Length: 75
Image (cartoon, rainbow, N blue to C red; front, side, top):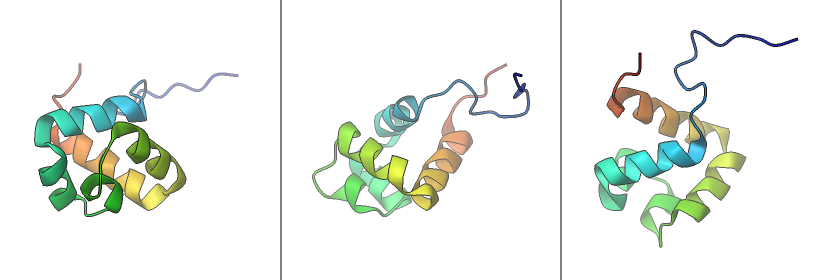
């Protein structure tokens, strides 16, 4: 049984793609200002950020929300 996710704007977008986009768009320093978490401000890397965000739902929610407000809209 498959469920359709027509109304989910993040469907098909990986967390790695989201973090990579935000780092390219803002840079680590500005991203740490937008979302003040250690993995963005203290020796940041994609790998450490993904590890933290996969374990911490509130931080992941903030990252996904920021992505939705800055990413170009997909049709």
